[in-house]
Image (cartoon, rainbow, N blue to C red; front, side, top):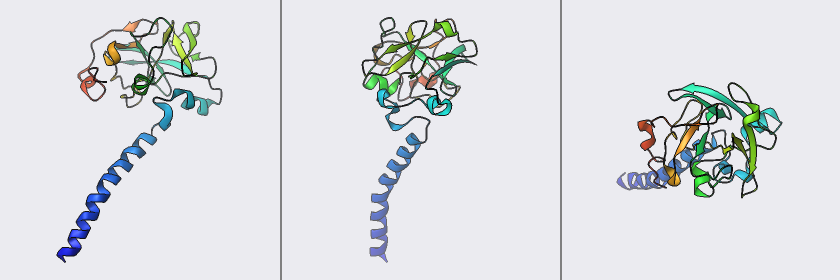
Length: 189
């Protein structure tokens, strides 16, 4: 009986880490982004592309604790990065893994308080086409859990601040909430 329990215990010790890894991988895979979506934008299609079939990203607006801000892809908050140079994105590699660019394969569309004339695109160094608003390249935050989540607000990751974007195109520089101090906060990249 002791020998049986020992083998059983060994099997549990070996299986537990594999099970945890499987759960984590399946949790990552269950989001609306493909595994390549964070950090490999040129090989990933936007979920709105498959839903609408047009390939055009839609930029809309939402209201939250920071006021009215831009959203894309099923209501996910979008951000601008103070580290970009004009309409040129300086966020790639590890930066683009934490802050995936908002990509499109068609002319972006506006709804809500977002304005169509303020939308544009810029070609990324990896070949993808990134959506811009009033000349600012737009990004998602990997630490946001979905619509209404704004955990990236005020983050200082990769050496410059990340801000939500108002419908006027200005950064919303309101104070970041305490939820920014997690794995993606504080600039610990």
